Length: 148
Image 1 (tube, rainbow, N blue to C red):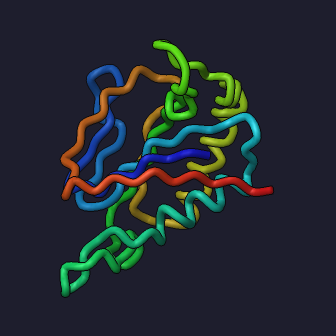
Image 2 (image 1 turned 180 degrees about the horizontal axis):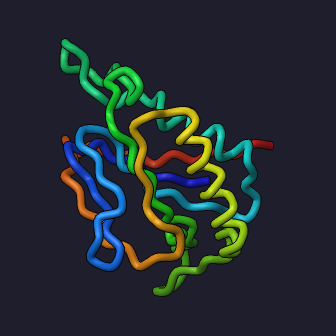
């Protein structure tokens, strides 16, 4: 699985002019599922997101995790992260999971996140979403998780 995490002061996702997920200080994560991904990848990805130290401590160093600050988490499915952009002028999605598998694993990630972390919101798989955020820093990281 691939995710882009962004440290935010606020973020929200809107579908059909209705806000379906909104957080204040925390992490907004765009999540893509690849063909070879499994539930173990989703478990590992969530643990990394929750424990990745990207928030400032009292010395203004990135030593605190989302759990440490009890911040919000907004998980948004975004299959385009799995694109191969190395050749030509058009992305290839050959490594992306088929929609059924992508939805299945994103649903699993969603269920796991609800069980693991209290302050979590979600985008909607397959929907035309409008995402807005204020990136704090800006601080942005790409995380890839593979289990073999």
